[in-house]
Image (cartoon, rainbow, N blue to C red; front, side, top):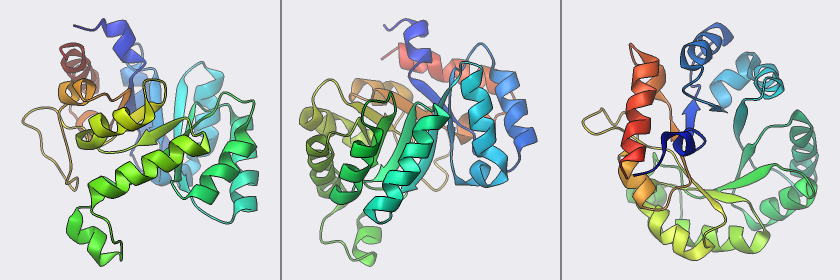
Length: 233
């Protein structure tokens, strides 16, 4: 049984909402229960980057889910400015050159760079359609090894793969798992999902939970229920 205080730092709520007003409302409702938020494309393009700065200045942790991928210099310059924002985590695609450029740019900062291995919405047929020669599990493990060698701070993967990834990267790197669904909930468009307790048992360091919390009628109760599941692992 894990203490709830420890788990609060490991639960990241995805602010997957269309407006700043809705994001501010969610954060207000979750105050005291949640201390870490993810901001992705949807909110980023609706003023979410300035909102991220506001959260950071108030002592709240932010995971910026930008999944960067570009030429090395562009990635490096982007990471340099993201470091200045003071966010805690940033995602980029796990291409070796991209990871090296980002690691060099973030050197000396507290920014945890996360390698996106395979999106949790993709299954084997999706991989084939995209032209990959590897099945999702094999590619996740290959990219995890590359991220370790590149000096990345962590991995983003399905909680189904967390146990195998943890064996590769060791105890110190973050293993951040989206696609978390409480027992009995709707999977939505996620194809590789597990429950909060199973994710913790599998070696996840942080769980990203979006819709099961932000779409809940009582967001605080939903977050507390997920924390309780995490603590039971």
